[in-house]
Length: 182
Image (cartoon, one colour):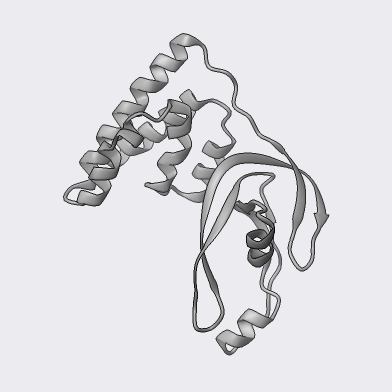
């Protein structure tokens, strides 16, 4: 799957799963695990996707990749299921924010940035990233997704936020979680 996405410059989906459809039998060695069917999962119908980049290939043949998520999609139908799923999808778009909502979202973005910098403590790399012009100048909408490259939440909560069509609401929910933790 990854090799085909790399060769054909197709986006690869990153999704949470609703349930296991088929459980794989335990493998005794890494080679057996890589050559047999793994668990099969039912994905949530709303997910993110983007192009991937090969970082390296391990000695046992696994591909380490970076996925540059740049879109949310909604599953319409599965076109292929084996050896991996290929699906027809449509963009899953946000509602358009009104001027007052845009201002409120920018304020939430700034509050989240300050909370994350405080949480970073002595991690100079994270602080430098958050204080960079690139992060400071992101739109509230872009920030409401890209913040998840820095923090990770409980899967069900993260899926719920992914499905939220309002940047203002997503940012408020992230700030609420950060305030609960701090």
